[in-house]
Amino acid sequence: MKRLVLAGVLALGLSGCSSEEPQVLNLYNWSEYMPQEVLDRFTDETGIQVVYTTYDSNEAMYARLKLLDDSAAYDLAVPSTYYVSKMSNEGLLMAVDPSKIEGFDSVDPELVNLPVDPENKYSVPYLWGTTGIAVDTADVEGDVTAWADLWDERFQGRLMMTNDMREVFHVALRVLGYSGNSTNPEEIEAAYNKLTELMLSVRTFNSDAPRMPYLEGETDVGMIWNGEAVMGREALPALEYVYPEEGTIVWLDSFVIPKNAKNPDAAHQFISFVLRPEIAALISEDIGYATPVVPARELLDEEVANDRASYPTPEDMVNAEFQTDIGDEALQVYAKYWEMLKSGQ
Image 1 (cartoon, rainbow, N blue to C red):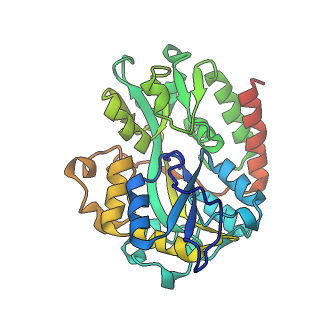
Image 2: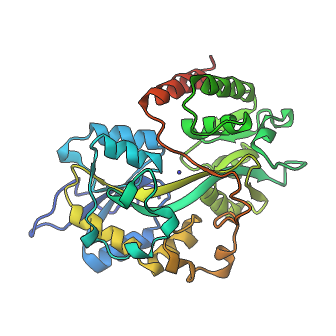
């Protein structure tokens, strides 16, 4: 899943906390994925200053957390869905202390106790969303209703895909009638072959700010995260978000505390702060993704609450599929074909 460039405010380095030094929370998150107002209000209230560092993919986040030693640790990260189980299984995460979290009981029951983290021992939901189709209706003639439509010859050189291996393969797998979580090497190979047919149409891969190729006129159809579509519409009203007939990709981004966090108390404080209904509503309205905090939904502006891009209807979620941890063996198969796809083999 789904993101402010270096919104952190300190040049103190990744320091720990003591009674003689200002407390610091080192937050590792997607870019443009936390309003600056939230960071400022948290600092004003607690005195804890936030250093905000960004990544543009789960793979990049995971690789960095595996390599960092204790002297360069982050206190919070925000992985998507199946990366929570992957990281907890590999011993990369610290257990969350429920006694230090306020507001967890206000989280939507449908978004807790998921297979990626039973009993939420390691994660607390932050935002959830979908990956669907973006269409610049000012430039695209005719309907676009399905992932399969992206293979239409009229879109050659006009297509954008997220720079996310699992999401891109998910699209091809669903077009072929398979699960987006397939671990079958033959199905993954078939998806690769299907994607090679699409490459003539792909203008760019982007997971930093997927709305930008559309806003800059570089592409006018392709993949996008729903919140990016909402933000993109502010500058490009013709940008439409489509739930594909084969089923949208669903993801949940959650707070986790890396095993070598230097200030886990501040991490728990920040999670509790973000779970406050008024803060959760502010975040959802600002960046266009759905909040898991049920009382926050009552505080949303009517325009936001009724926006199908952010808050889909049951009909929009027909055939929707969460991504799951497929295991290292299958992941290696995906990675092999992803490298071949990106290198033009």
